[in-house]
Image (tube, rainbow, N blue to C red):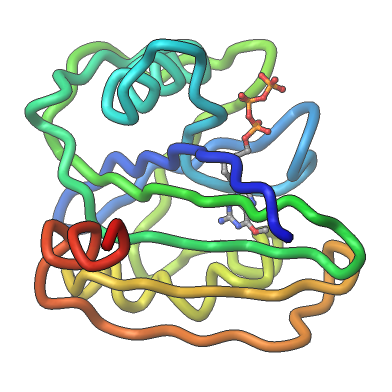
Length: 167
Ligand SMILES: COc1nc(N)nc2c1ncn2[C@H]1C[C@H](O)[C@@H](COP(=O)(O)OP(=O)(O)OP(=O)(O)O)O1
């Protein structure tokens, strides 16, 4: 049986650029990614997303300005934990991105995303995000470099997706 752990993943972007962070420690170290992490007790997913963004690159966002744009599930061979990742995006934020002990932020042009230095799954679902399509994707890894199989689908509505998932 799989144990589920919920994570957030936030992308700050506008029509031409996206903010990524270079992970300096922990899971996914030495790769670019969005900003996020595990939920703390008694925290909503949106609250966790806001907190992790602030902790990792010093930007402030309001929960109401976060748009849930996708859902990712990651499993790893011989590991009973499924990572359940809620993906958010916004162009509404306050502050200037700053390096922290966990992440070093940098803006990238949307046509120059550094996929060679990112999780291998990103190249499959980023195109949905960049075209403003909602998505649900599952990836099963062997180790951290090899995707054994995956599935990705476009969604009409995140609300309908979560409503169906909970039944
Ligand atoms: C496996 O593929 C993944 N791809 C992408 N793009 N992002 C992933 C993948 N697996 C995990 N993530 C995301 C989900 C989270 O945003 C972070 C991992 O969070 P982390 O382990 O750093 O959580 P924290 O609560 O910040 O951990 P600390 O206890 O170290 O602060 O990566």
